Amino acid sequence: MRDGSADGGRAGDAPAGKATVDLDRLASALTGQDPAGELTRPGPGDAVDGVPALAVARPASVAGVSAVLAEATSQGLATVARGAGTALDWAAPPERADLILDVTGLGRLVEHGAGDLVAVAEAGLPVVELLETVGRVGQELVADLPPRRLGGGATVGGALATGVSGPRRLQRGALRDLVLGATVVLADGTVASSGGKVVKNVAGYDLAKLMTGSYGTLGVIVRAAFRLHPVRPARRWVVATGPLPDVAGRAREVVASQLAPAAVEIDRPAWSREAGVAVLLEGQEAAVVPRAREAAALTGGEIRTVPPAWWGVLPDDDGAGAVPSAGADRTVLAKATATLTGVGGLLAAARAAEDTRGAGVAVRGSAAGVLYVAIGGRDPAAVAGVVRELRAVAPSPRDGTVTVLRAPRDVREAVDAWGPVGGLDLMRAVKRRLDPGRNLAPGRFVGGI
Image (tube, rainbow, N blue to C red; front, side, top):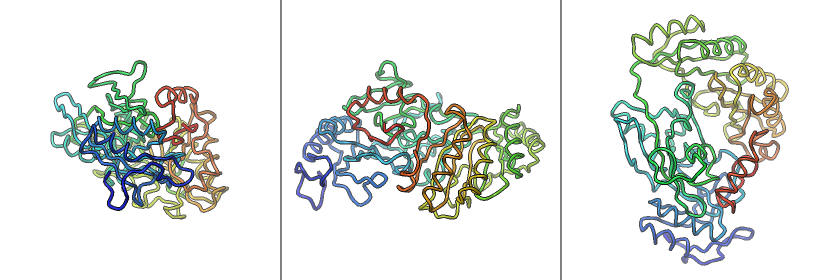
């Protein structure tokens, strides 16, 4: 074990109330299969949303991931996978994080089949590096990660585990639609693959899609294959502002029109009675320009060659100026879904909640119904009240959801982070099938999964 201060790997190093870790056995299992792998004692930053780890493993191969996971599970440890850590505080804190499995040692682009518009990447590869490589031949992965995460080195595995997608999901689909296949290591060390570039399938499951958005609770993603798209040569944005009902209505008309927009985004800053809408048209110059004119006529907006400053930025990122005033350290970030016709109601509910709860609520995202919400306020009960009022807009999970992604601990104690969720029994059954001992990020996902 690499450690400059400790005396190796005694069993029983853990603080009271924590699991007992045999570090020597973990290190031996890892390096026996993966000589380049490392096991270290945790440093100050080795925690998952406030839950400290007892050890950090950094394998450099799939065999190393398999070996260390098998050994950790045999010891009854809880393992949490980590990439660049740009969203490690999203979802619920884990019940335990005995071992952090750092996947940045698996950072290779395995294959770029430019002719087939396919890329295969290891989990620890930064998404920005993938984009740079495929961009050299005029291709892209239309993931549109938030700029702060992309600039922070967000990895392929982390992007999949959190299931994040940006503005252009409207036309090209979300990240889960772009992943063709994945190789995953289960809690017991089993290596399984599904989808494109198949090695071996686990019967009955589409692992790639199953793992997307599961926050590492079902398996550790080690490799994934993605569908790429050619970069379209011309772009125009049509930007308009107006009262909330008008903007919601105009955005809905564009989404439902024959303009085939690549994205239609809405931005409603906190405390504002107005919102902005931005429509992206992509394609050949000769086709984009007239479509942009039609979109401008439909929305009453102006045509630009660059996006507005808030484009693709999460509303709790102060770089875009939409953050509620309580401060970034207290701002709650949530993800809201709605039907196409329900977006207007969500915007109105955000404005109404500000008056009743005294907490600023910024809303930004796709007019088709996948949006992010930033809630500012120092009173946990008030912030929790805002979440409940936003959830009340949708009569059922099928009509809309509000999921708390990031929040201070006192807010998490005041509100159910997930709210009503459909299919919870099925999700729990999948968890029991793939991770019966609850050794992977226990408690991170909905229903305590």
